Amino acid sequence: MASRNWAPVAALIVVLTLGACTTSVPGQATRGSGQPPASSTKAKPTPVPIVARDLLLQDATTTPLGPAIAIPVGDSYFTSARPPECAAALLFKGSPLLPAGASDHADSAYQVGGPALYAESADVYPNAIDDHDVVWKGFSAVSNCRGEAIGVAPLGDFKPMKLSFFATPADGVLVWTMTRPDWICDYGLAAIPRVVLMIAACDTKPGFPMADWAAKRRAQLSGGTA
Image (cartoon, rainbow, N blue to C red):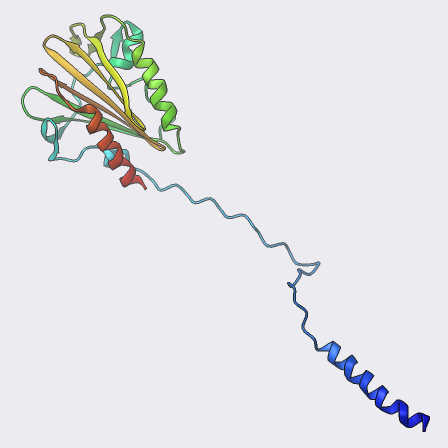
C-alpha cells in the first residue's frame, strides 16, 4: 500500500522538474569571454568640401548697385592703411579681420552700374570657427580707427576717409562705413562656422543697404554649405 501511494507523487515531481527546464527566462544574451566588445563609438563624418570660389556672387546676380559682372580685383583696392590701426576698417585684400588658417580663398571684383565698385572675398576653414567671436573681434578692431585714415593701393595713396558708422545688425554680421565728401565705402563681414565673407561696396553717393545685403549673403552661405 505504501509503495502505491508514493508512485503518483514521484510522477508529479518528474513532470515539474522537466517543466522547469523548458521555462523561458527573460533577459539579454551576454558576450562570451573570448569575443571582443561591440564598439559604441561612431566615426565622425568627414566635413563636406567647400570651394571658396563657388561662394562668391555669381555673374549677372542683381545687387543693390545693379547686375554684377565678375572682373579681376584691380589695383584700386587698398593693401595697407595709415595709421595701422585703421587697417581693419579700410582693407579688403588681406583684411586683418579674417581668422588665420583658411584652407581656401577666392576673391572677385564686379562691374556694376556707374562709377560704383563692388567686391567680395570668401575664406573657407577646415574646421568650424566661432563666427560670433569673429564678428565681435572685428567690431572692436574696426572701432579703433579714429580720425582720418589713408588707404594705400598699388595705384597710390587715397584721400583721407573717416569711420562714420559701424554696427552688428544681425547674428554673424558686421557692417561699417568709411566716408569722405565725394566717396563712400560700405563694408560687410558675414561669418558662418566654416566661412567668412568680406564685402566692399563703394560709390559717389551714400545709401548702400549693407546691413540687409550682408545678412542676405550670410543666409545664402548657410544654405549653400549645409
